[in-house]
Amino acid sequence: MNDDLRSAIIATADRIGANPVDLATTFSYETGGTFDPWKAGPTTQWGQHRGLIQWGEPQRAKYGVTQDMPVAAQVDAAGNYLVDAGFKPGMGLLDLYSAVNAGKVGRYNASDAGNGGAPGTVADKVNTQMGAHRAKASAFLGGEFNATMPGEAGGGAGRAPFSLSGPVGSAAPAPTVPVEAAKPDSGPDLAGIMKMLAAGAAEGAPTSGDQAAAPAMAPLPPVPLRQVAFDATKFFGLLPTRR
Image (cartoon, rainbow, N blue to C red; front, top):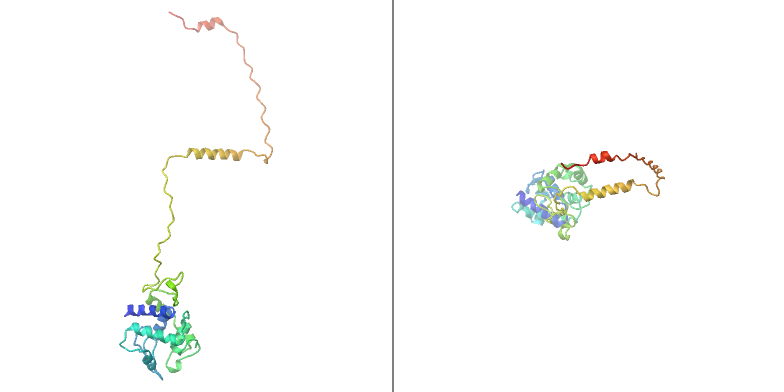
């Protein structure tokens, strides 16, 4: 039953423009956290209340709710009841629960405590009594959802479609980043090194806007050559002789 109920909540919420978690939170609250589609509630002027939104007997007769009907059909009937009670696409939990508890949206200060309901107004119950039920509803559905408004193509921009396991990611492939092919290692880049050295030398050279360059060094005096007399005997003695 859980899968059928989960699918029905999501489908009905999508149809009427509600958040599925809001709808499931209301079902959890009205059934004491059981999601029992025939949960018995108090007896009021409307007879024995039962089901996911605690239908009174006249309301069950009007919307065709019976004990043996499929749970999905009761959820669909609850959607019809909410629309008839004034629920519009985009309304939140406060109006949704006002329709269930007070018979019409916008009745935030109404209370059914005199008919056997929990103490507090519609607003009190939504704001202070439903926290644990919302957590249970979110876990039951598989996560928080954003409602899809009727008539929105594709669920609206940037909105994930509903799924039994929560929002579904986009089927579009993830963007890829081109990767430059690795270049073979051919050793040091001698040409690049020479360019860097030349650039460094150019940066270190003074420009016209720099301070005046230091004066050039004076040329070194020439070294006098010592003149030696030619010794012919010694010269010829160094020459090789024939034997």
